[in-house]
Amino acid sequence: MSLLGKKKIKNCLGVDIGTTSLKIVELSQSKGTKKLENYGEIPVEGIELYASKNNFEVRKDSSFFSSSTKQIAKAISILIQEAGFDSKKAVFSIPDFSTFFTSFDLPPMKEKEIPEAVKFQAAKYIPLPLSEIKIDWAIIEGTPGKKKGLFSKEIQGTKLKILLVTVPNDVIFKYQEIAEIAGLELLFLEAEVFSLVRSLIRNNKGVILLVDVGGRSTTCSVIENEILQSSHSFDVSGNEFTYALSRSLNVDYNEAERLKREIGIRKGTKEEEILYPLIGLILREIKKLSSQFSQPKSKGVLKIILAGGGALTPHLEEYFSEQLGVKTVTANPFLNIIYPFSLNEILKEMGPSYSIAVGSALKGLESVV
Image (cartoon, helix red, strand yellow):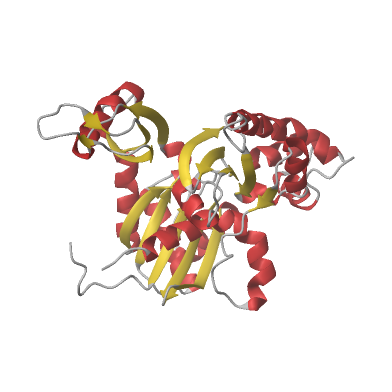
């Protein structure tokens, strides 16, 4: 298909509807250079203030962003207006707890045979009818084959490893409705792990683990040679860190959040003692994934990248490095993006929690219109 007459999108919004906040990033591009134009966030605790100023109601709990499409769309509209975003083109990320990942092998086959084979295999792994889900997939190992000769039935090719991603149709419809009500042109919906990979993995060969410590869950993903191999979510989260501190120290949620952000797991503190069991659960999951790459044929895990709001827990980075013996760094999605120098410290601090929104906006800049 010719792209003659079409242009790349110059500005795009990345929209991350999280369980603890709504984040939007606007990026632009010119001659291959990416620039940060704007960013903004509404935390859950700030929703009621926005609501009272703008005459709409919200549910008074920590699950606002799992509530009605109208409430979410209204919050997006307010943030766009308050922060002064320009673009109406947007890419939304879908949280990992709304998606399903698995991988499986297929025998050598021609490229045109793969879609039907994937559907057949998907039915074995997914508990929902195929009519109720959207399927996406990618070949992560192997090459589609061709017939050896005109009259041969034998396929010349390799065994294929397929990464399967599925999202329920009702989730897709909800995001489409949110974008429409908010007055945005929805370019793409994608699982947030792909946004993370896009914003954080650059020119990295070998095996890298992405550990996204979000407000509701933690997701560990394996990326090998810049290709997502697997992704696994489990119920340990940054919010659980805060709740554990609140219960054990008998302080309110806001004070517990402050202690988490200022003290974290500093050695010799009560906070370290309280958070250690939860962080230990994350470490065990990482070790399980790392063990897959400890065989002689593999060079092992080269690096661990911590993302999500929980990645900002003080001393977490060095603790993981010590316990796992692997270089661990905190995510910086703005590394190859131009922005004013005055924002350097701010963006460094907020980078881990904005990684998904940045990756979504980058996805939009790959598009043409």
